[in-house]
Image (tube, rainbow, N blue to C red):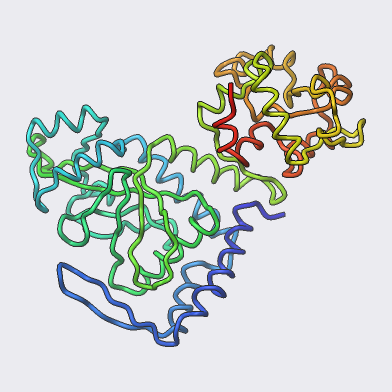
Length: 392
């Protein structure tokens, strides 16, 4: 059986062909603005489709493994990344293509968690002598990152870390842009890449430049073949979360859902102890479940709707991993994992007490994690606006 990741690539490839490439004109004209000069060219649609099929190969198992290898390479570079705030400051310090940092600028960057790395020529991401795209060595359908060179294109970076990156002039590079947008925005594949920037710096004898890198994500799906990429700087934490999701997708079967992490505020607000001791919070949680037609995932009550349970005290908070069992292992106590909203679910009193200290059986467990029922964490994800405003 295929994994979520393999299934995504198969579906996305066919969808990209049908809904995008086959809708392009027979002759695709494109242009790129380089330092005020417009360069134009064209390509036949049939030729572009050939390029795509060569880039995204039929052997989906190999393609998926190449992508996992690609992600592992990117993971290694996270140890060298600067924060979005530091990168934003560095962006403003970039006066020319050969800017040199003052000691005050260096201090400002370091105070904002910048990593200033001596240029390494053998590493494309850290080599100041290269320009443009940094292509993946594992698979040509993906990118390690992009190089920011002052003055080659629009240099605007807003306060949220958003900016545009112009496409390369070759048709394959533009095709890669559209493909990466398609899988990351339409299919929610949590990919990321790096933006790299460099400055003149002569402190180390073997290198006369320092490099900064920062992870980023794609934020918009464009229809025009020669559109730029719309990007946003992201933190290391968000990058790690993306890696964890991708690895889960590579192992979990297609009938399972991959869940995004909850914010720390939600985790603290909706942990077991908080809900148990705060009657107003508990009441609001149950009221939401009743209004959405949520049911008990247990079978002893024949999956009774919570709206039919007139006494709210008969609606319990259950644990997927039982409290007593988890108390034997220290790591469950760390960061309050045992009482995390993703380990909690609503249950009628009859079904919850019937478990005693046992784990839910296969049927109950499958119900709890399904879209029809869900954990408390799933409730929050489906209506974060309600749960963020819910009174404590």
